[in-house]
Image (cartoon, rainbow, N blue to C red; front, side, top):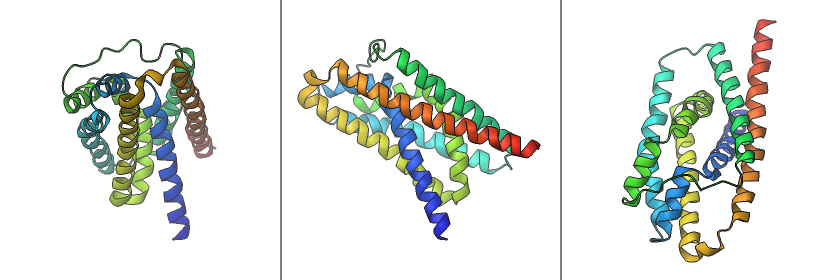
Length: 214
C-alpha cells in the first residue's frame, strides 16, 4: 500500500513537471494571455478555463477509449518511443528558437474565455502533445484507476490555471519588465525538462522493448 501511494505521488510529480514544461513554452495560448493581460488582470484565469473546456473532454476521451482495450506492450512502447523523441525534438527546437519566442503568433481580439477555447482547439501542437506525450501519461494514470486519473487531470489543469493566472497578473501590473531575458530563462528551463523527460520516456520504452524481445 505504501509503495502504491509512493508511486502515485511520484507519478503526480512527473505530471506537474512535464505539464509545466509544456505550459512554459511560449506559444499561441501564451501570446493570447500576454495580449489580454495588458487589458484585464483576470485574463489568465478566463483563458485557463477556456483551455480546460477543450482539454478535459479530450483527456477523458483518451482515458475511456483506451480503457476499453487491452493495450499491448508494443503500443505502450511505441507511445513512449515517439513521445520521448518528440519531447527531445521540442527541447531542441525551443533552444533553436529561444530568441524568437512570442513573435509569430496572431492574438485573438475576442473575449478571454472564447480566446482560450478557440486558441486551444486550433493549436495543432496541443493535439499532437496529447496524442503522444499526453497519451503516455494517460497510460500511466490508468494504473491508478479512474480516481487516480481524475486527480491527474486536475493536477494537469491546475498547472495551467496557476501559470496563466500568475502571468496575467504580473503582466497586467508590470508588463514592461517582461523582457527578452525572461523568455530566455523560460526557454532554457523548458529545454532541460523536455530533453530530460524525453530521454527518460525513450530509454524506458526502449528497455521495455529489449526486455520483451530477449
